[in-house]
Length: 208
Length: 404
Image (cartoon, rainbow over all chains, first blue to last red; front, side, top):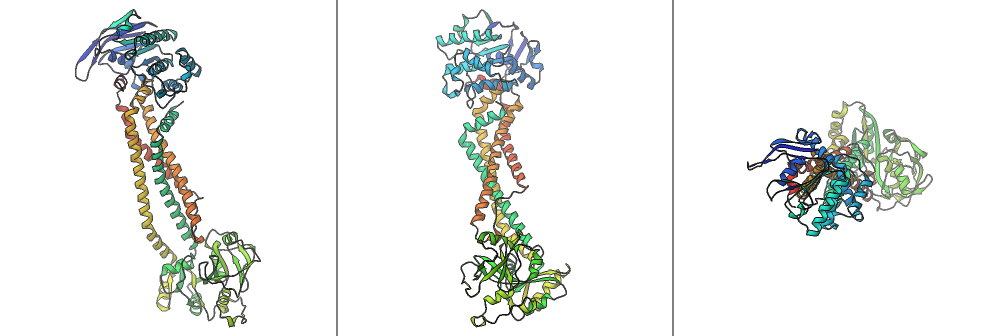
């Protein structure tokens, strides 16, 4: 489903980083491991279509991501890739439900109200639908951002260091939640982390 | 949920800034629209009332004062002229129509104008109710006088001396309302018309009272007496140069041209209008700057929101438009509010005005006001352009991976 080949990223300072080739099948769950500064975020951004690599190609479902125009790539990302960032990055002037709807609107897809509500219910936060991000705890915000990443039924769910600021119990809860939600929604899962606690949950790993 | 709702939500989240910006825009537009409406209305009134009058002849003094008193009925007359001299001018071969005026009295601030039938021809007057005046002490009143003073046909009233409502009342004679004029949309709506004989009668000494001379013949009427002014229409435009010079040099009267004097008056008021106009433009400039600064500052914080929207699949242009749209919404609301304030303010000014002859109203609109709205939108777009342009520089990947 996803294949990266001969990827090279050149940093502003002139240092370049070569990434080993990688293939991810449908609904597979992978860990992207590496120490801080090893280029995990860079690779995630390249796969997500946010950062143009110096060389090489990223194929998602047969589409060469960097052969698309910037505009097509934005819309492709909206429709096929869901991203959970280290920080939730919700829009503060919109309530939880509107934040979910925003994902559909920005990708140019119709708003599916029922699905949004059931996503919130699956994540155990349906009572927060009308709350604003300021009123939520860190853990709740994290869940909302997972729900948002799943709104458009993506083929690939990417999570960047989802557990870095959580305690053991919450960390394993988030990891389980990501694994289950990705499976339920038919998406492949890719988690970038340097957190040792995450390793036990997955078998497939890609080391940088 | 669409881009408009997102803008709206963001604007209501920053209520104070939004309100400040709207008020600034509204202020600028409000002042501009008051100036615009007032100067257009004044201009219209000046032109309409002086439409068919080529020249005014009256006693020597300020030509502007002569015009103001005998055409616009605002100022005091310059004095009187001998009716005999006036009569000579009226029959000058260059004159097509000459209207004698005898001013001096009022009723509740509405001027009583002694004149003859040529006056109704000059302004194309027609009665709505009753008849034109026939005999001494009969009057025909303008439509505004009728509606505001509640005078009806058949009513009688006492005139007061002078041109403001607090003069001595002429108790010895009462005027009788014979008719009410159709609304003309000019100064005649605010006048009380009668014959010149009535005005004389009011100002006769007590012992002359029984000495009545009821005559409708105009030449008799103004024989050995004095009148206030003559409104003159030329036979041909050629007379513009010759006739005023003749009057000013060979008689002890003066001739004043309404066109020249009102343009002089307008250039005097114009200085004030220009100053206010620049002031309003300055306020608009401050508004634009304020919108620019608030959007620009907000960009530091909104960078994350906008990066997220990009990440969720929005194109650069969509996000660019979002920021631009917010600036435009603020100025659009401000402009509409400003136009509203302008109209209401002018209506209030009109209601507070003493002289009903030049009353301004806010209940009119001009097609040019559309330009004010366009200007507002343009300023909004201009002020938000630079903040919106920053969208193109934001590195989404870096913004979102970095800590807030």
